[in-house]
Length: 463
Image (tube, rainbow, N blue to C red):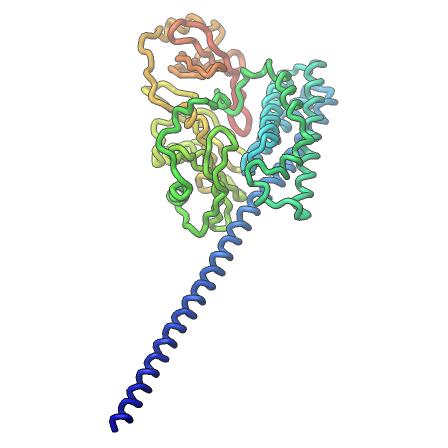
């Protein structure tokens, strides 16, 4: 009897052990399945992120090629233009296409000297062609020297176009991937751009020495680069913190954001992200120092214009206030494809501070903020100690040409080509049918600058 009880107890004990082992095995199996499912989910998400990023890079890259080809074509036409009227139209097209090409080039996260040279080239082509178009608008024919400069620019444009097409072929046949290209210092891209001589881009600078003082895209908008970067305040942040800033700024979710990593391409070190939300791809960069918005850009087709420019200006002001950019005043704007790009300058005690510049792109169908650029603000913004010991506005007026019919006057801080700033009396007025901005030094009465205002169907420019 006792042996029988012992046998039953042993059997019961073994069954318990078997059940325990079975439970352990089942738990392990379930955990393995969970790990496999999670790994598969993570892999698919990463693949989706890569696909979104690659789609954005491809779009920017092929748009860049298209605009470079247009630049090359219009430059070729400009070298054989026989009339000032036709020259003005052709050179305006060069300016516009080069600007657009430069914008798409900035969205390609590759950090190489060759790409930096290409960006510099497009910037110079845009500036030079704009200055010549203004001359042609005034009915002046181009000089032999200016035509020679255009021929040189055309040769460089051909080289850039051929180099980009070679790289395009490499990407299309799978020889080079975007993952490889985005690695800093990649040899593959360096080899592709080797055909574009650095010396060529260095030599071209001499062709623009006479034009460095010209103003484009609104008054003083190109005087935005500062080595000190006074507005770039705060401690360094990591990529996770930058991602949180993106989520808050764009009101988006984790799964909609993919990272391009840290880029030192350009003037401000920043984390780049691609956001794919509601079938719209957005690119955004957050500065490593301080976590500031460096730029944000998005695109969608806008088929109609419902909002007036004045309404868009107020929408932009409200947006900037909400994001912490207070005391911003609109200066100049340009309308294109039913988007309006507005320049806002910081205003301190009724003094317009032109170096502290922010640009907003606003959709004119519903007022959506489509883009933002803060380079000028981040480079230059600080609280100024504005000199109050200045000459009166009446004294400043004595320095003006008697023919200038003054429409408005105010104090403004303007930048110089030496990265300094000058407090001036700004006078806006007309001589005959031409509008001008005249800047008189508020401390010594010296005439510092004169800009001509060019009113176009799409907006206001100064030169």
